Length: 478
Image (cartoon, rainbow, N blue to C red; front, top):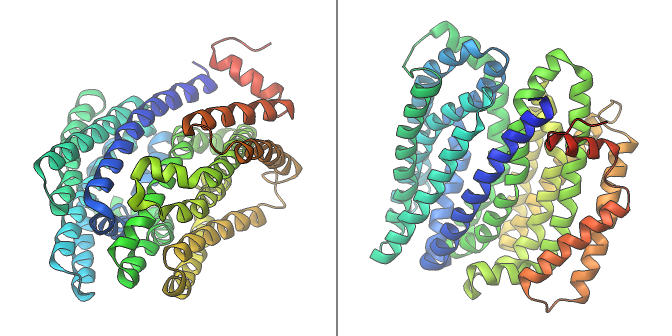
């Protein structure tokens, strides 16, 4: 199996899993949000957002480091897993204490505190689950990660349906992620023992020192990213109340679903790019250029299409109570476009042991996001928070472009890739604009078809892409 086929195999496994997971997750979010209503759903969203910020302490940058190092030397898997479990438990206790202190000092009501504490416990367990996924990823055995994702999403949906049938409240819904994470922990322990190695607990202080010294840039980056991903929901909760958080997070959850695509793609590529950095700079450059092309090819039609159809999408999924979310979605989707364009650069610096660059950029983004939210949210509420998220992601993307402007990773070819995608997206958007009353699913399908026909007509699919397609089919390109 050649490199392209191996990437394709891992991507297809992940795509299949994510499609099923997204399907289960879609119904989970829809049923949960509709049943709880904006206010109670806002409480749950706040708990998830707060843990999104503090949960990075549990992981402390260990996940990307584990993948990178084990991908380069498989014999290190046992060492990283054994010590990582103890490290994550230690940091998990610290995470719980910090979250406990925050919600207590801010004076949140009892029901909110209970939801936050339960979600925090699930965050700690998920931190350990991530270590097992790191091993699967480093060994390029994505099927085990994928099965876990499908199992987790399916169980969440089943438990949510049961909770709705029983008429349970938001506290019980908070128990769903905890129950699912514990079940997945058992699954990972069984799979790892069966296919890779026998998990155990180990305390190697010397290994801890060297690992944490390497991991801290990843950890800092994760802290800064989590701040500008989640601080808006936390600040909205404190300043504007639970209902506004519910509206904002209905749109935000859809945005997170859209981010699954680069997540799948770069999960598959990260181990290979890490090896390419050591073994073949040409392969690394080629992989980056193709990755940027494919991300830009997807980013712009998503941005244009979602902007024009936002109100119909929100109404279809969440119902009339969440219609204010459409404004947030129209803005937030362009932050998705920025993330698609910046992801290849983020993956590049991680693979090339330049995580300090990402740390610096995300630190500035986190500061910008926090300051803008503090200024804008009091006046513009969730619409202001959406605009702040977009401004932050745009800043990060432009800073990456600036950083690599004089290297082989930025130039006319990058601009050409974006230009073709933008032109095809504008033509697609014109179709949506002139036929706004078509059935939602029909207009989405037609728009996708129009976009790719236009993109192809603009020579968006070149000889290299055709060779890759042939290799994906297992045919040797001539």
